[in-house]
Amino acid sequence: MSRCIWALSDDELVSRMTANEEPNARLWLFQLSDEMDHDNFTRMAVTLWSVWSVRRKAVYESIFQSPQQTIYFVENFIAKLGQISSSRVRHEARAASTIPPERWLPPPAGCVKIDGDGAVARSRRGGAVATLCRDQSGLYLGSSVVVFQGINDPLILETDGLFPNSMSPISRWNVDPLSGRNRVAEWMKTHHESDLSENDYGVRIDLITKVFGATAAEDFFEKLPPAAKSLEAYTALLHSYARSKMIDKAERLFQRMKDADLPIDVLVYNEMMTLYISVGELDKVPTLAEELKRQNVSPDLFTYNLRISASVASMDLEVFRGILDEMSKDPNSNEGWTLYRNLASIYVDASQLVSSGNSLVEAEVKISQREWITYDLLVILQTGLGNLDRVKDIWKSMQMTAQRMTSRNYVCVLSAYLMCGQLKDAAEVVDQWQRSKVPEFDISACNRLFDALLAVGFTDTADSFRELMLQKSCILSNRASACS
Image (cartoon, rainbow, N blue to C red; front, top):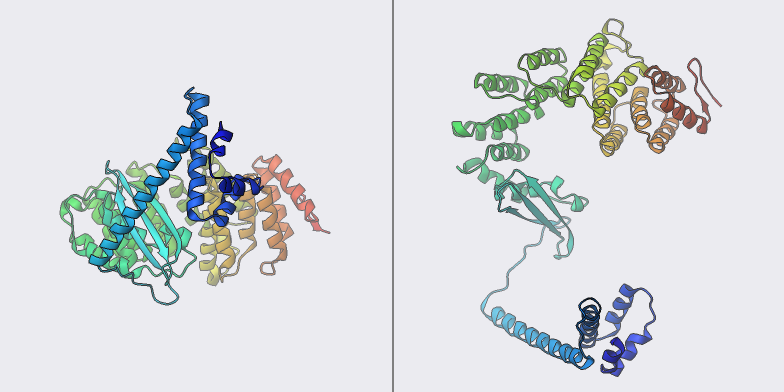
């Protein structure tokens, strides 16, 4: 059937098609597109489509069409295409004569321009924002689409779309989104719609904080009507204070939330614990933990991680062991929590951390130690959550910091990869450690990690670690080790 159709087609067109012997169909089309003029390529494409349609109907529907009918359809279709093109040209010519051309304002030299547009779903359950990136000449550089659940305000969607984290495919370019973002955020500060949800007000406070700072967010919050000051709005402002380390304002706001009888959840307690750890007031974390228990608020893995970070950083290992015991008895415990508990125990044992009365570190370096321990336990937390990509990101950040790393940092990330069976990543960490000058590679630390794995019953993991180290010309034992 197809041969009969092509026999009725233009001979020159068929000759050019058969002369191209490219076996890849896509490349075959691309090459013919380059070789043929527009009219001939259009005719070829329409004929190919028609042949496919006729064959499909014959095979699957037993509907047969003569070659003459097919050629007639092709000619008629191409004629209609020509009419549409002519009509479009005339319409565009008339429009150009009556409407002045729209000007596109290019970005400054060395920058790109981002256009964003947001839309809300009909269900009002969420929305999406799209961003388009172009350079000074208007050349397309990239685009991004992000879906936001629970946000039904187009203004919030478009504003968040102007933040770099919503534009990951174009983040390698020099993006300066502040001009448009400032205008939108300024409007947000002075307008309070009555149909916004509780979550929307929280998002607005967060966006205002990012653009103008915590003081502007506080001003926006205080001007909200009482009905709009929900738990979400309070929590967003508390996060603003915590991120800016405004401890006095955060504590006063926390008390206001309790006085207002708001249903304070675990996120609020986690926010306060994070703030206290960041400013070094570790002694306040246990007090918050006790209050959380009295209020019957169920802790999550983040809560336990913050409590453990505070206890380990202050070298209170008795409290640390007690928290691990609490976790094991928590009804919400799962495999991720168990992995976290084991890794935390391995980390403390392999790092030779001791109780506060017998600390190994000097007073002047305790701040640095607290920060490193927090980083290490963040690695363990993300491992327990199953976020190995995030573990890699944190490890890269730790290596890039100006502060001096310790053997504990290597032991921590090494144990995380080993416990997850990521031997290739573990081998890379060992290679990095062996190349490091500060700190120097410490075979005794590796041996302590080996002992710690055996102590918690992970014999197979310990054996895998031993084999890995043998490949690196290092011998592990539970007493002494030596590198050849």
